[in-house]
Length: 139
Image (cartoon, rainbow, N blue to C red; front, side, top):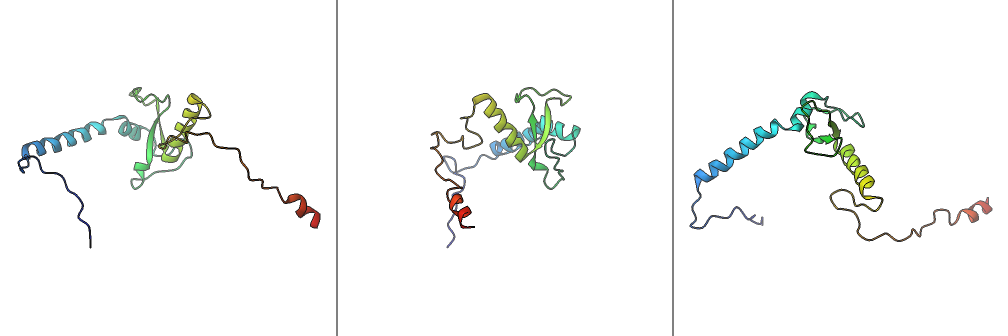
């Protein structure tokens, strides 16, 4: 039996305000147009659809995987000539931010969405060469 997912809550009184809903949709459409004028779209228009680090090429099918990286890591620095932007694939973009975080915060910095481990890891206990001496004697 399929469980019913909870839908949107009805407002007090049970009536949906169509005018307000229309205003929300219109605002979303205006925001989409505004984003089209944003730095990502500008960068995609002026730079090739190729990762500047690994050289991976992008088509319309996988273009959402191509991100715009701010070279100086300042998202407010968006010169119209695109000199602070470079198109990077998701993997190279993540690596670029990991390197920056490491440089700014040090070796104990947490990376990515998870923020890294809070506690220091213990010393490694595995020795891959533990039985090597005995193995060499047998030959």
